[in-house]
Image 1: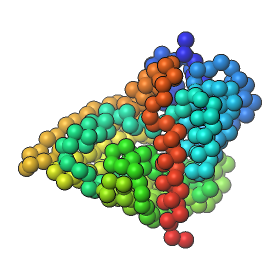
Image 2 (image 1 turned 120 degrees about the vertical axis):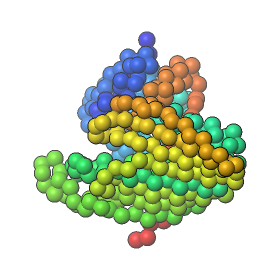
Image 3 (image 1 turned 180 degrees about the vertical axis):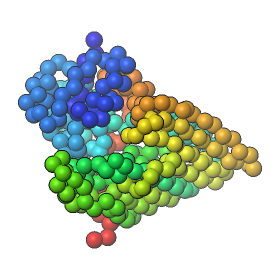
Image 4 (image 1 turned 90 degrees about the horizontal axis):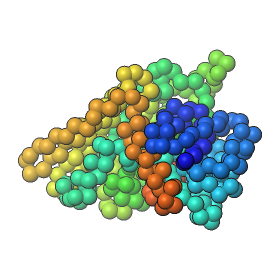
Length: 326
């Protein structure tokens, strides 16, 4: 019997727990805010500790799991800084356990198809990638004030920028140069008691990146605009273009993920549709990722994405923050 401890009653309980159970794991969920419950559970003989607590608790919970020699999966963003991420990676390597980073979208069927096309040379060498992602996830309905809107703990760069940076690294190459601009569209939010609190973190950003392959990348995204548009990204190569639209509603019904991939090459147009998938928009990726996680931990085999990928993304995010004009 494979036993997994999930630390997290939000995404961990809502999405991860069910995917783990489908993958054949026996799951226990504890609240990240209940320190005693977390410490007690981590001392038990679990095969995997899956950390889905807020990022400012990641280091505490990952290190607690490592204290007991557990294999660990940590959600993104990986801690609150590259320094914290580096410490967690070094400790996991020292303990000698399988360590995994929850960049689950590497297992999304649509994105895996895009990677197949790029790796096969279908568009030649990638020279540019443009990614636009605009949604109202924190605005409709208005999300209450919490760590996500605190510049020292959250912000859209950390919350979603880490996923986007990981996709760039995975598809195009390592990020070597960065520039960034941010804005805050919703400047006040009610807390749990209804009192208005200032939002000090960005809820939109534009990043300009250069990879070690010489490709340029532009990411423009926001999660507090008046409505949600399909996620769209275009990858331009020396021999062709891949254009992707991902129509998805993750947090509000109807919950459908539908991906269209258009390949333009030699004057010909090829369109593939992957989906639609009903349910939470993370599920098409999280389900196969959960299977891969179980197999890796069961066999003691280190796979990607790992803490090393988490550190690489944290370093880019730190550099993006440093590039913001003050």
